[in-house]
Length: 208
Image (cartoon, rainbow, N blue to C red):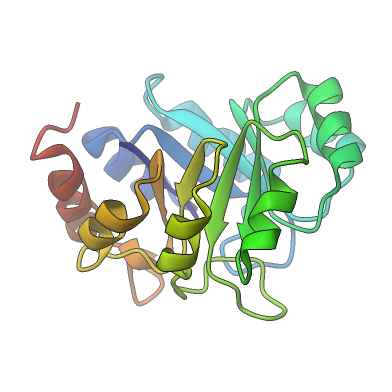
């Protein structure tokens, strides 16, 4: 079970990740969101992480050209598209970056999962839907809907996952990985104790 800690903004957050060793560390690189970090900060965060942790850049409705420009400054390992991107955009980002592409889907209906699987992304991020917001809301997805849809494509479950509910979510949905943001925060700041608890639940205390 892969673990992604997203919404990383501070060097302290990276230090928490270095201690706990999630598989992925995510940063919001599009402007206008509470957890957005500018490219210069993102570069510092990536440079501070352990090499075993992959850096995921989260973009919302950016063009392939804009994403490629950010990559000139920030050494990312994965591109996560979190808006209403089309198959053409996914293809363009892949062509310009050569990196794995993940596509987030704010799930309301099974048809949205089926449509997302046709976009050409390497992995889906399935999360809860909040009108007008692009994630990080703490709202859980409809786990039963996702479980019943049985996506054929590799996917992470996101949206409102916490130390209290993640074990139930994994048992029901059986994703390839789990993605946390608001659920590892206290008063809007990453909380290492919540992060530790999640790693212990998923890995049985083994941080490696």
